[in-house]
Image (cartoon, rainbow, N blue to C red):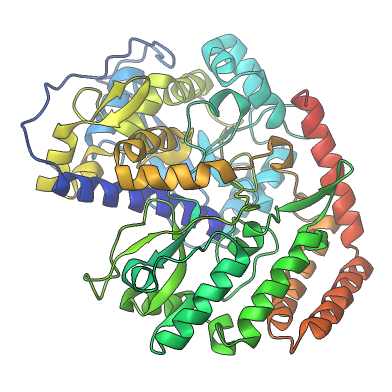
Length: 535
């Protein structure tokens, strides 16, 4: 779940930070005329009396996040006015599943449950028959929800029995890809220190060999500067390409190695060995050291905050910014290698939003879901109030001058408004408005122009990992642990011959452990996804 927390946190922080920075850069020409939400869409309206709303319980199985109390901000008030529903949130005291397991055992669930779909308790609750099949509820009370999400969505998200028990937050589906930004602040981006790069004469850094030669120059001419900081206390087996995974992706390594329509562990991709040899060359030439490889996230952040590094792996949208401890330094975007590929994520969605069988207000629950997942509901919860906080500009939502003025005057404005706080209905709408803002900003548009050509999203590779508490899941967990142990030894090999031997030994060990069985499941699940999407 840590990757998902990082995704949510990075999106929220970058959005708010960019708002503050943009507000400071803008001249305050006076607020635009404000208006209420203009959409007349009626999806989700239950006909309940908003003056005496029905209170529905929502349990989120995660101690790390607290939803703001319903009614404590403007947006939740507006939603209640629209739907006649208010929410009461509960959550566990610790992320150990004990409370939710007890609720499952007692068959005592509130109206709504939000749970990480990779959490074993998600499938456990479905197997126990505790979640409603949304299909019949939508047919009876909210047909507009079923239609809006699209057939592909329901096919991609169906459980093993073919039924749909959840609405997925932050999901990807074919029908919403055209309007959402495929690259954004949640994706990695290489950054270089501008003053040093210019002092070197702006040499080419378009290829691995180019970058290696420039890093050598930095090492020789700037002995107090780290040529490159990667830093990762863990080496993900499959993840978004941050840290060392970023350089593997820069060589064209994807999350899975695809050959003859079959999927294999990505380390079996020949490009993977090419990337390892390049990283090993950085080590044997002293560009990175044993200490660099063992850096924790906190140590890496400390080095980056000091500004004493030439090349780092940052995020899209963070270029042209200064390190925390030296505002005289600025980092600019560096180009990707020609074969680089960036994947969006490893699943269709993140948290599942379900209606419990024990709910006494199923009609109101599905209609509330329908409103929250409607165009009006999602724009309100993630953009704010139309005309006041955002407006449409050539088919793309963008922030208004009034919004930036409010953020500048009160950094807590978005929090008080309740914008983005209730993300269980997140339909990647924040990606949409983030795209509009990035395209308006010349420096961020530069990042889009650099990195969009390297986007490589394959829908049939999403959500194909094994379910919890399966043999394949056990194999994956063991393989991940062994991979994390082996990866640093590849980088620290004394020469290419030793690296190749260690690499070959590792592949054999993984095969003996049962990884081919895991690969067979990946291929089987990918085939099912291809068929469901007619690919």
